Image (cartoon, rainbow, N blue to C red):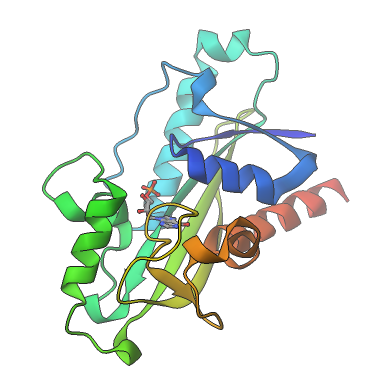
Length: 215
Ligand code: IMP
């Protein structure tokens, strides 16, 4: 069994990661580490931010009394940095996806505000030019040596529909229709999203990495 500390406070992301990784992995959340630092996501790529989160947390963890007190000690820190790229907006919101509605502020915006801003910007854009993709980069750092991060990426192509629909998922899910489907991620539900998504594709690569390590 491999124990991972998932370096995010986004409960939806942790839930998806746990479900997709399945029984061979034990995922710890930052809830068990209340003093963990909040890492400033100021890199200009998903890979840069994911690496920064994983490396800084692994470094903090190695000196933390909370780490020594844990029953199940993490073997690795796993960080996810992800977001939405809209072609007609030149790839925005991209690394700024979480704080799109208030780019001048360092804190994240509410999903509803991000979604309203995106719909407003795309108001005049016809259906055929609303192509977009979700991207995810996972950074894995071993707690044993805290050395360099190993990266795994995934993307999911689709389009932005003209209004929100569905109640599942999080973030831009009510607006994003994956290629080959007519409903948003929020309508398609968890089991479909967890087969198709950017995060699922990156996690498949991570699982392959661990199965090769074990063989
Ligand atoms: P991060 O936590 O800095 O990686 O920010 C990710 C942001 O990208 C989230 O707050 C969402 O706005 C968006 N995002 C990432 N993955 C997804 C997804 O699976 N569905 C919907 N929105 C997502």
